[in-house]
Length: 394
Image (cartoon, rainbow, N blue to C red; front, side, top):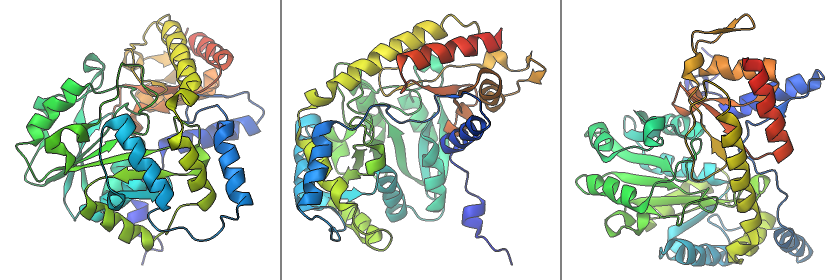
């Protein structure tokens, strides 16, 4: 009898975390690795949020929290949804979790049965597929390309739907591509889903504020989608609070109550101090984090300009998040410094070993022709990293 379960043996290791671990190993060997693999802002958490956390400690917030979050935090989330997304929720439709990743896992566990299909427009965030599999669902990948800015068309969605389709998951702005679905594009996808009333939508909007377009649009704003959309968000990215581990959902009450039930048996409520800090984050004007968004836009433009100077990199213009997702398939079949590049994983490994720059293979995101480069790093690091990549490919 095997010691470990088939569940864990069949699970992939997170590619982003695996690359970060490899980079750390090389750093420990004395190599100066520039890390562009993790999706983590390089800013400190804003002072007004840290001050709220300190106040919570001094106010003796140290007890177990309600499973679905403090009432005051749920109120702040409700106001945030109304202010930023024009969405109206009640407290029973909100669940606070230990990061948006737990929010996603909760939704998968309460909605999926064995064999239920989940449509994933590729590229998709690395954990989507394995979370679906853990819940005994079947990921159905819909390939997109740089020519469509890595966005799924209504025709592709219609073609992917079967009698077993239970959900569609996507992020906008997207990790890893930085693509942002416009209101018109989301309405076109909704028009397809209106013909299939039993399919639910998971809209991952964790990057909503890191958006270089005129407006972020939530698919739940479309009346026909409201009762079948679970909107997932959190404070990790826009507020530089990755380690605080707070995510949340807004969605149909029946689904939210089920998420509360399952969370009550796994982790219970999220960290008390982080929740109090999140109240301050969400109640504040988004003007307080605009400096980070402006800096990300500046870095994006620098990275695009520098990458376009490297022959073989095919790059589009991402409209949000803090990633570029270049197509590097022109290098496949070539031999560089004695190493043959057969796929994106080989290319990403080559950049780590020869350019001393950590990126992530697109294969982990469902796109084998690309790599993900995070520009959540200083301008000096980005310029140096791309210069090293350029030299390693000459």
